[in-house]
View (cartoon, rainbow, N blue to C red):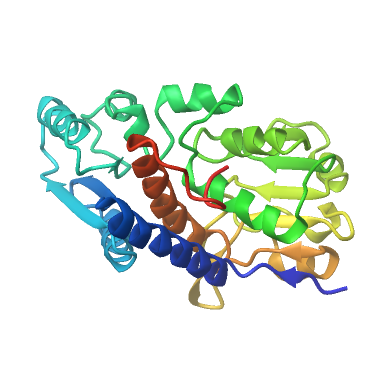
Amino acid sequence: MAANIIDGKAFAATVREKVAGHVTRLKEEHGITPGLAVVLVGEDPASQVYVRSKGKQTVEVGMNSFEHKLDAATSEADLLALIDQLNNDPTVHGILVQMPLPKHLDEDLVINSIAPQKDVDGFHISNVGLLATGQKSMVPCTPLGCLMMLRDYHGSLSGMDAVVIGRSNIVGKPMAQLLLGESCTVTIAHSRTKDLPDVVRRADIVVAAVGRPEMVPADWIKEGATVIDVGINRIERDGKKKLVGDVDFAPCAERAGAITPVPGGVGPMTIACLLANTVTACCRANNLAEPEGLTA
């Protein structure tokens, strides 16, 4: 049985279309334009590419894009002063500080200096706590994208057995919280999990988010399971550089009921959900109804 391929690129395009529709309504009915501010410190090439893509997509859906590019030697005090300025700017509804930061800057301190209601990455300790206790929060973009695709494919997730491989603060832990919120039975597995293959084999939903190329083989996958591959790993094969996930895609696709590819699966959803979070933050800031279908 060949799996259904969950096309993240197409799904992300649909999310962006919905976001653009909400932005148009906010402008026409309320005279409000959502604004996203992205702060980049230093000249990390991957971060520069990512920030350019975020800015381009922000403008394409009709939102205001504010980019702040700072020198790698920027002091912590200067960075915190900029964030404070953005926190108090009513035209900015979402703030994202691109990671990683130069080593002399305290990432936790910087993240927690962002106003929680403008923390569209969902990393502020207040949003982490709200999500963990089932309250309204800003939800990290990648797990939110995974949840949207799972809901779209399955409808209700209630009662399903889900295994999240990986316990990072960015994906693993919030993904588990979101699945609990959908009434799944959730296991978080990691490098020290005993009998990891057997743990994964019982799952109806497998979310792989460990950052190890093709670590999940086909014989770990239950027949008909849904596999969400969050991993993006660069490897060399046959003398060529290639992007692969945490799942051994081709063999796993023969056993799974549905699977996300790498590239073209979860990746495109991350920026789409960042845009969705910015619209949600704008609506909340103005006491307006939240955009349907774009939140957890």
